[in-house]
Length: 215
Image (cartoon, rainbow, N blue to C red; front, side, top):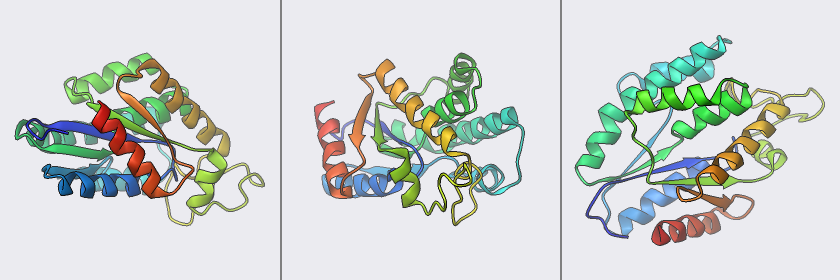
């Protein structure tokens, strides 16, 4: 994997799939190979990100399109303030969630207009797409169990131990999200690498490295 030019690597997947674990492991592995790499996430990084993250994930219920525009505002600032400058300096950026999460969670999950969401994402990012998207896939029930779901089917929803508005959505929502990610991967197989999240983190990392080496 050459380090001569910057690359944007996004990590996607349903809640509980292990994105943050893979992101950290990937950052460490790339750094060990002599690649200058930045680890970041959405929503929440950048000068206004923490405030937007708090509203999106820890606040009260909000209108669906308000939710979309908050995610897009966070993404715009993130791209222009952190991601693009790092890429222009030849650094690699590993991003825990990026534009595909908006397509899937708000489009497939909330049944908003996917075509319009694609256009809005393009505006927010000025067309900056990931060079590679690592999609961690695993059964919804196992993923939700990892993040502390109680009575998964008894109340029809996900009760997570920490406050997170999206995690508390009904299990049917999370199934639509998983299906949405897999559908997006089928639409763009050159960009997506689907990883088996139902295995040890070290094995997932091995799959991720192999996909980057091959790309």
